[in-house]
Amino acid sequence: MIQRQRVSVTVNGRAYEREVEPRLLLSDFLRHELDLTGTHVGCEHGVCGACTILLDGEPIRSCLMLAVQADGLELTTVEGLTEDPEKLHPLQQAFWEAHGLQCGFCTAGILMTILPFLKKNPTPSEDEIRLALSGNLCRCTGYQHIVDAVKLAADYLGEESS
Amino acid sequence: MKPAPVDYTAPDSLAEALALLAEHGFDGKLLAGGQSLVPLLNFRLAQPGVLIDLNRVRDLDYVRETAEGGVSIGAMTRQRTLETDPLLVERAPLMNQAAPLIAHPQIRNRGTVGGSLAHADPAAELPVVAVALEARFRLQSHAGERWVDARDFYVGLMTTELAAEEALVEVELPPLPPRTGCAFVELARRHGDYATSGVAAIVTLDEAGVCSAAKLVYLSAGDTPMTAAEAAQSLVGSELSSESIRAAAAYATTAEIEPTADIHASAEYKRHLAGVLTERALLAAKARALGGAG
Ligand SMILES: Cc1cc2nc3c(=O)[nH]c(=O)nc-3n(C[C@H](O)[C@H](O)[C@H](O)COP(=O)(O)OP(=O)(O)OC[C@H]3O[C@@H](n4cnc5c(N)ncnc54)[C@H](O)[C@@H]3O)c2cc1C
Ligand code: FES
Ligand code: FES
Image (cartoon, rainbow over all chains, first blue to last red; front, side, top):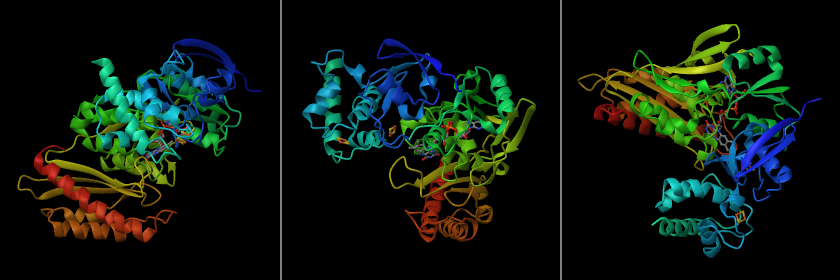
């Protein structure tokens, strides 16, 4: 019998502790143990980007980490963007206004990719935006409106910080 | 899919990790960035009994200057670090040219140097870079350590010199001679995918601008990183004219590489592509050698 192991992890500033099987993927841990179902799961082999979350502020694939590996670490998921569900984060606002999503399956992963990207590069060119999005698949939009949304988000975040 | 049941341990020292590896033998598997291993677990193509996680072993994450003026890189250094590390930019620019071509930032934030080198995918960039730069690898087990040259490390398709109880702990790159230029050029269908074809070119010029050493190493061109030694040798003594470069590219890609067809490209197309990329890489390497900046 394989022993379950204890995981203590901080997600969106809140501490959680659970006992889990070592084989449990971090993506499934977030969704099924912590009920943070904003993080989506598409391919489970690192290709689609739907499961992208932040580990210490940097984007990673949560389907390619085990929950037990996150012990003692700090994570941010899409739920961490805003505390008040009535008030969207500027990134979310921009995606809403620019029609940066249709079914929404890819959206959480895209937001968690773009958030650190815009922090490092607040005024990106279109080419840089497309490169930043290249690790996230969207089957609906054709990407054009996602690119527009990222441009709008860069404007909003720029206004916010000035 | 989900991994099969597996045990997990996260030692915080290398000695402990190596002892665990010796204890578990073929049933134990080192877990580095997990960017190749976890997909294999998810597909149940790998079903080890116990994962030995190296992520808590802190002292394997470094980029340092060696006494000879080269660079040594710890196995747990993230691929993301290779893109910007100032010492690598100065001493081994081929590394930071190749690193952004590996997958996406989300993958490189976790994926490690040691993991990519040990995984030995013939389509991967870092094994090609290591062979081209004449790197040597420090392999360590509970019983001791040995050094293996990168070119001897890759023995077959995803097969290396590593024994079951060994870990790759360090990569050492010798210093590059003056007037040396490097270029890494590849073509992938989409940015971040494994490349259809790719080549690392390194050329050294003497004071008169004549080529005194050259190297060509290919990815996706055989079971291991493929070195075109004769084509590179044909460039030595030339001034790297367009004609000599074209002839070397033609020879390398007809006689010295063995690409196989896949669903995206025939072997013939891959040879053609490799030839085009070789010309581009050699011209870029030459320009950098002349410009003084690697
Ligand atoms: C979507 C996607 C796209 C990718 N595209 C590319 C690409 O274009 N080019 C490319 O090169 N790679 C690509 N990769 C793979 C990526 O670079 C991996 O990071 C790399 O192949 C493995 O490194 P890792 O640290 O993640 O190792 P892991 O996945 O943890 O381990 C891989 C293997 O190496 C062994 N291992 C790990 N570390 C050591 C060590 N120190 N000593 C001995 N054995 C060890 C493990 O036991 C395992 O067998 C891609 C991955 C994904 C998910
Ligand atoms: S579910 Fe993780 S990348 Fe697709
Ligand atoms: S909006 Fe449907 S997958 Fe992107």
